[in-house]
Image (cartoon, rainbow over all chains, first blue to last red; front, side, top):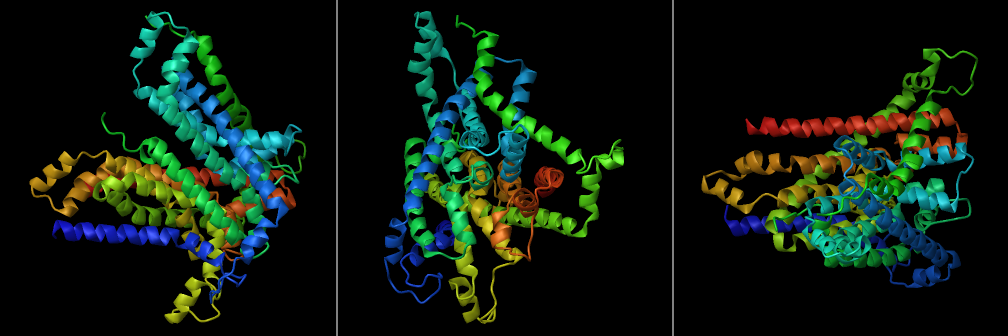
Length: 270
Length: 287
């Protein structure tokens, strides 16, 4: 087969899969402008659902609450994850301990989130704590923390420390070396990990559902409530905003660090 | 010479992250194991049979076994479909459209970040009676006007593929992208056809990515509970729903713990089988 024909076939395949992947989201956006509240055809244009969306006082509050939670979680992960990665590489723990710690780091990633959420709730009830805002924050942090540790650790292992050594020889303090040399080198990985942590905890319905105190709602919990109560066109309108925000964040992530390389892919020899 | 941080400094750096994992993951998982072994009604001396009573009760119960079977087969099917669709896509992004590969990959990740609940919700609308997909299939004469596509294994499987396909593509992309072009050029220069290049170079070198992808698809899929609840209805149940019911309705701590551990074991064992198959395929294809 000629090279050009083959390339065209691959383009067709790629286009088909992308179209199929985005069809459900496109459908939600399309239906947000449809008069029928049940997501069915025929299609008649309206913006009524957007008007209704903006008249829901709780939704804005819930969104802000979820954004704040994910932001704090991402920040906590950035700090604790970077510290852990530094401890694993620079702290020079004995080899056996280092590999044990890396296995432990994978446990929150390996156990299904549902089980983690339920397990944390049962344990917290057992020790007399139960559902609370603090536990919600901590639970979300522990679930996404391994991603940051993994990404920063991968970056640190590939680095050489000549500049740090030169800095130390010239008499710079440990803090100054860290801020001036180490941190800028690690920044792309920390940033990629934090954005990942932010997005995963923003959407981590299973953890939120089991740890959020009664009366405290997150956006995914709100969507779950709407989904369970039946088809509601407000969700369509809401989804338009979420799609735009997510696409924006993903594009920003790609611009900043390159999404492929930030997940360990595309490690081209330098 | 670089000053070596003392061992205490290393421990201090590790403390916040690992302290959190210890307190919120390791100890609770240990407590879960203990809880699953504690019978609901403690009656004096416990024998070994009594100790594993909750597990025996789970496996003796036919409905429980059927739900467990669903929790293995539906995620397995979703994983294989993601692999079948995702491998060629990862290849296209890594080797054919390489210049735009990274950007396309970023775009592919977007639906995941949109919140999977919205994707589930979209499927409710698409598959319902009068929804576009159902209407299209009806127009083709494949289903009757009143047949809903909801509440089926196919609906649950499809939603899972949509949610996790990007992770499969991302993992495989990483391993395919690392194959040097010189290797592929040498292969074609020596007269290897597309099939031979695939079986001898592309597939074997992508196996680590395939295994990572299987972990990222299969393990979370076994823990699905909203998908079977909303798209499977009462006809298709998975273990996640059983666990959720114990937490939100009956509150049977022993049973919740038992089913959670059965689910975790199923997730890990199922993934181990998939990983072993991927490893074996590498050797089998080379013959």
